[in-house]
Amino acid sequence: MQTTIQETQKIETQRPFSLSIYLLIVFAMSWPFQIIFAISDATLELGYLNLISMVMVTVGTFITGRYVFRDGFKNAGWRWGKPSQYLWTFGLALFIFAVPALIENLFGLHIFPAGISAGTILISFVTSFLLTLIPGFGEEFGWRGYMLRHLVKRYSTRKAVLVHAFIWWAWHLPVIFTIGIRQGIGASVGESISLITLITLIPSMMNAVIFAYVWTATKSLAVSSVYHSAYDEVRDAIEKTIGFGPLVSIWEMAVTTLLGAFLLWKGNWKPLTDEKNNS
Image 1 (tube, one colour):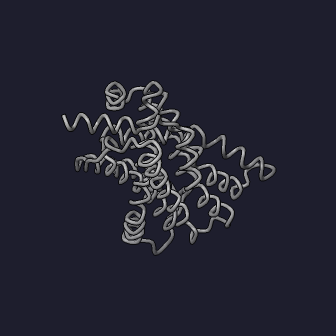
Image 2 (image 1 turned 135 degrees about the horizontal axis):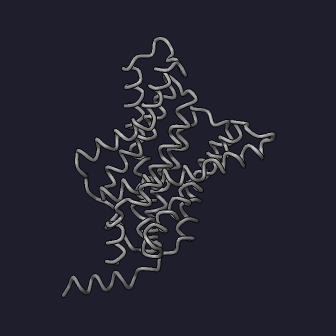
Image 3 (image 1 turned 180 degrees about the horizontal axis):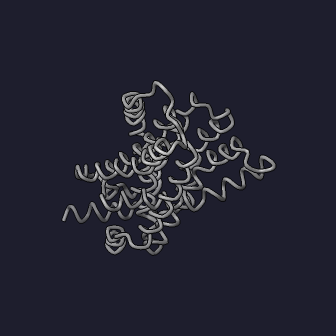
């Protein structure tokens, strides 16, 4: 009886979730760090600003879930997951970035610099991976563990995943604009930014679908955070040591787009559907 009274009181103190309020708080707390990074020539030395931006997603999410909507984080994914789940997430990150780098070297598209050993790459990866685990959790907790759970209560499961994917892409716009400025693929800066923005839309959204599926399939923030960190740091470790040739970016966009589209179409999203039915 006491438990029932406490649950009733908790429900009465909750406020309806508002996506616009949630995004306003999270973007306001996290975007300034991306923007500072973007207008500061985006040097590697300032890369920590993006990590802070990722952490601030968690801070904004905690504030909204704890003090604004007061709905808590009970089903965010508080479990460790299975060893096999960590293995296949690492394998996926390697397939996306390491495989095309090896193919480039094998066929002479991009020759590895002299003096770079496997140990050098591994040290670079491990160091960056450990530093990115908490920021990776920051995004997974916010976008998947909290926001996606609320979106699926409002939309059909796959529509909720797509809305979440679009928001995730939009959150990266300061970084995307920076890439457009630095790439200079158009006749002007504005044209370059516009082209990069359009080019990245679908691949980024499908990549977000993959991230959402990792969290959905494992129901583990630990596993999804490890995948997030592995994805970022396998990429960065290779880029900083042996560099990317022409195939890596094409391969990454193709793999993430095709895999994301396949998972969106054929993936088992039942855990999300179950949560919707039980809400």
